[in-house]
Length: 163
Image (cartoon, rainbow, N blue to C red; front, side, top):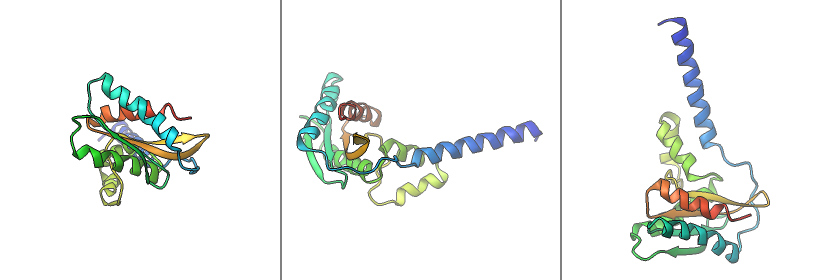
């Protein structure tokens, strides 16, 4: 192997390790007071609207920083299994202070990322996002029922409205 090939390989490995580290890094935000029911409803509404606009059927859960359910809604004809998954995604995002996409990416990277499978309560499936108000994590939103990317699109619509 040439010296250039070795350097390229080392750089590629370093880049991959850096990406893995950033994927599993928690948000630096402190926890704040729990999200109010009013703000939880405000966060769920655009998530549900995004799903309806795209003809997806989903369940939406909003939890407080401790993972306790604050608000929940399931659209008609949403698969039953998505009911609990939405709550689990929200809890995972709140308790681990990161979007569940970060856990999914860490798992997909393999190696050290496979440890995610052993972490109780970690849901490595896109669709859970922490909710931040005034720089503090006040809870999280979890969406389930469509593909994980579509769930995340709905969750982002909800998370973007909380400020």
